[in-house]
Length: 215
Image 1 (cartoon, one colour):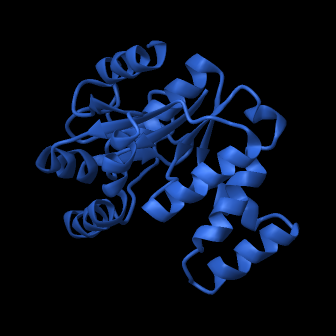
Image 2 (image 1 turned 30 degrees about the vertical axis):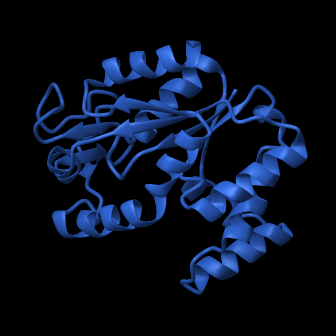
Image 3 (image 1 turned 120 degrees about the vertical axis):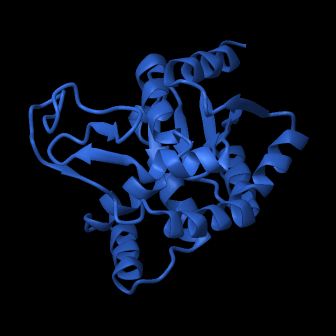
């Protein structure tokens, strides 16, 4: 099974990707995580990525496609994989099509998490995580059971992302709608797109995604 998750920052892609990974035995491939991991390696591709990142430059579409192509060739991707953060543009979508075709693979579904922007701002600006284990919380929607203590590991240290603020979020949303939103039309034209209400409770979103995948 090969899947793509689409949605703006804060739509819940990461949360749902982890649940899909757990329930269906496929691997979540986050381009951000992959780039950071690859930059630590001494391979030719790793050195190339490290040089780009250290120079503060954007990673080219070709380089990202090469990274994805290398990663999906590993044994743990044999049962399938879920792409989170790729493709981001129509150019990358075409590169992915070509890549899968060369490998004799087929994209099974593209799931879009639809969200309300105003609620999204509240959702993002209120979130924080445990500094030790990464468990996620929210000022309004999910406080620790015991104030100041992580439910999962008992740590008393928490952190917030510096870019989880209204100003930065507006910039990120603009980039999403400019570059990534056209993918909605692209995959709809190929009858591969399914839209799920990303503003529903996490469990309801998961059930809706499962219904798409079971179909």
